[in-house]
Image 1: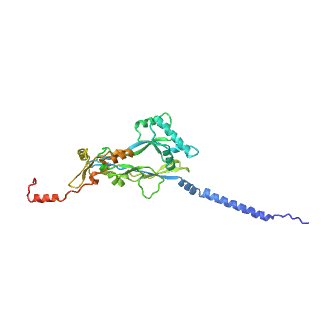
Image 2: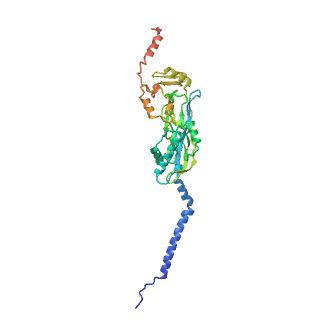
Image 3: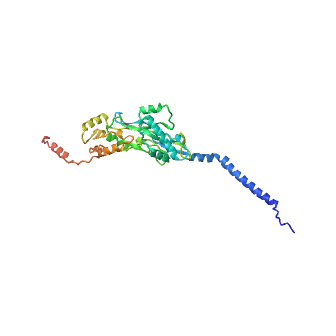
Length: 345
């Protein structure tokens, strides 16, 4: 009786071994190409994916009168900011948000300040603008900055942050002519930016009419973030180009005189130079202080200005509506004088 045991041919084992060896060599070749030959390409691609572009506003141009008196300037506004990546906690986002909220409470107690942001503000910042500093207190004075700087205990994640603020040295002088600004995103063309820092945009008067010239050209910054959005490094990018200074034809002293004469009335006055048509003064009463608008006016003050029966926001010199009157009477008077009639008649 023959033995039915099947004998596996040796050549088949050799073929299978060669196929496995070929597969291993092919895999090794692929790994060598990806990890060694093309390592710079793939590491660069990964690096580019973690780079974010931040749009930075340019310093706003100043406004002067015809004699070089500054009517609109920029001042540094000091704020206390928290950099959330330095207070990062493991686990869910709520852990980091709670940690930041507790630290804000501690610092508020230490500095004797009322809180200006709540937990929802922190959560919104984490979701939308995580790599950027969160402004916890804005417009702090020198006393608060001194208490913060001289505090015996460290405050990791917190630092002084400076942002520009529009300032009108002459207060309400020529406010309807100058206008005012408000916080807004910088204007840019077709470039793409992941984040932007709020700047100043003209809302009325010359601030709005010449906003393109005053705003300048925004700059940019590059930051490196990880997969969760935390910032790890920053590099300077394109420098911002400051806005152009404007020199108006008005005379600040004459403007102040006209406004004093109109004080307490609802009236307007425009004085022109008859030799060339320059506007030497343009006043409207009542007026308001444009410094209340910068960097942002409160809702209560805005409602009060709009509900004021004197309508202080209205520039009566150019936007007031009045009955036209009889424009032919001067011609009749000139004809009468030309005929020698008594002007007192």
